[in-house]
Length: 366
Image (cartoon, rainbow, N blue to C red; front, top):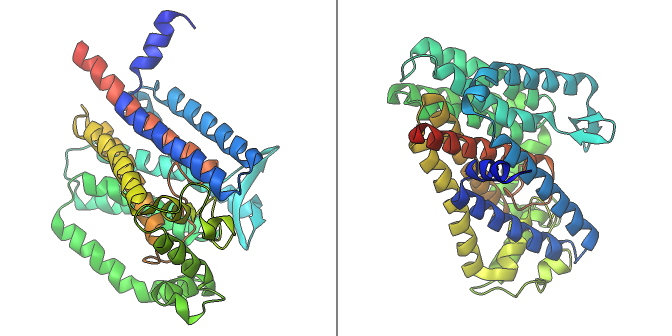
């Protein structure tokens, strides 16, 4: 690649956002190495996945927002087709049918919808003046409901809620009137008993009950949460030091490299380390929101704002889950937990945010 090509790539990147993302990836490498019992093979796999995800982000940062806007309905349709294919010919595991397998590639199509649904809703709402009318809201809710229901059928209630939340977030950013917000909250509240009795499976109900009182079954359903809380509390102010966490190194913390990796962070680096991690995470989210705020068109503002707030929701849900505040829903810590599909999805979103910022700068120069 020549000098002009390198310069073009560099201009497509938002350096403050990139610095925050790379810092979180560094935290991920350190915590995965510790949580895995200093396993170099697992560390290499995580490094490879981060590298692939960063490459995806760099490529996406070069795609103009107008192209994304034009392709939004097609991406959404492809996402729906993949979700339907999962129910027909998906790979089952751990009591759920959530994956598709293409040769050596195995992926979870629900991750695609975390990008496709916000794109679709932003495309719909940007076609007319805001705030949206009642008929637009009804049509939008239908667009949100269909993929969420397909994911519930896998079953994967936690991911379905997060997918639906991403679509609703776009609606909220579009300036929905307060009476519609209150009406939506009333409908959700009224539907909660039906959700409990007719939608939730027994193990999902048990997770909710366990979140309120994990000590009712300390060696069974409450074991994961109790061990996680012990690890977080034992970290104290300064922590026990990297690679020195007793709960993590002695393998008391379940899923310590994936969903519960925040407990490893709290035990080894203490309260100060947790606060530093929160500051870094909030910086990434706020930078994304700033890019959304100064974006030049409605579609870009809605999309960048949604992706930024979605990352915040992921942080909030994971930390709340690991701390025993929220039920366990199998949500990884963004950019930190060991994994591939979630990492690539997040980097796709950040690449879109960077594209929005880069093309805004180009328009300003013209």
